[in-house]
Length: 147
Image (cartoon, rainbow, N blue to C red; front, side, top):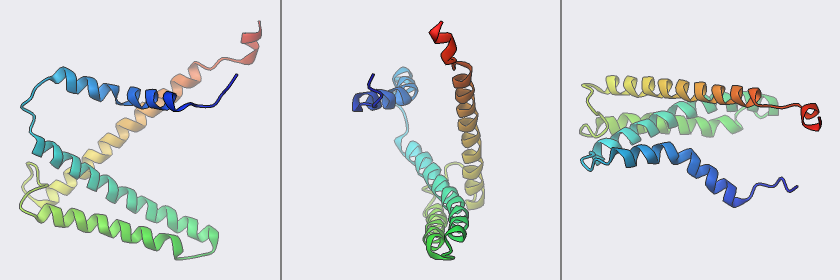
């Protein structure tokens, strides 16, 4: 039996991944959605995720560089990426309230973004844990198939 994953299976898997979002959009059916507000939320989430992931990767690359005996090579570029994310967040929240949503200050917006990121990450981690546990529950031994 061929165990290779075909492109068609990858497309179906991607569509199944997006199915809940597509269903929510279709079922909502409301055309009064504020596009600017959605864009603002998306950009805030993207900038926060980029910045936090960059800081995490700086630490990760620092540990990696220690193991490779090249103390500065990998993590300097990640430090620049983290600084770029922080500067972009600060500059864009200063630009006439484009990324401010409904918060009164820049600090409040950044704190809101970080908390939103943490809550979303925890939800994803819990969902992945449940899926892994379900996968282990559904494992069958080879002996039971042979009988």
